[in-house]
Image 1: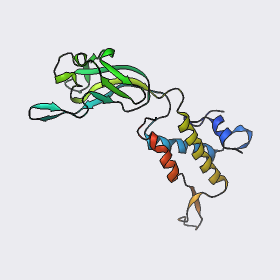
Image 2: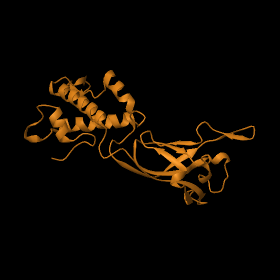
Image 3: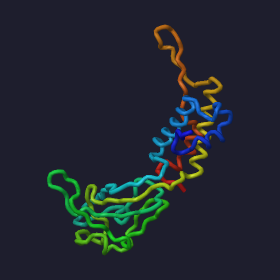
Image 4: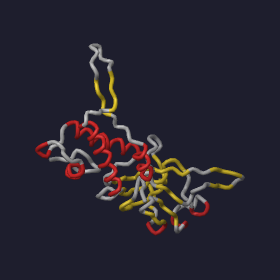
Length: 222
């Protein structure tokens, strides 16, 4: 039996959602519910749940020039787009670009001892400013300004999704599956020319479920 989801396995759903289809298989409707719930959660929190490698993910650093001085709110920190981080590979500075395509043509790999990576929160903090910019073009060793001029390679999430998110997913699947089994599909339409009624399964999250998802919406969890 192949798993239909990525956050929870068939076995976990079968154990949690009692009285599932006979012969150890999910019906098409049940499989679609599992996929649908996971897809909605992924869209809600912007994450893939599973361990994912991001290679040369581009980051931009914005600076403002005021009274001749470069200033920025967070110019000594870089916040990664995905997390938590299970392993960090490299942080590179783009030093030149192709004149035609604009793609990076040369990079400088910032030494690992120049910064600290907060793995849980996905934050890169400068600890040795002198090693950040080899050309010393920017004051104070801060991350150089530019569009897509920093490239990060790292692995987000662990091999196992967080237990509390798995449990929340199972609860939502069980609720929606129970609704369709009871014949209460939640929404209906009578727009067919022959006057027949077409039922649609309501996959909306409840207000409590929306609240339970809040800690995950940034892509990081406590």
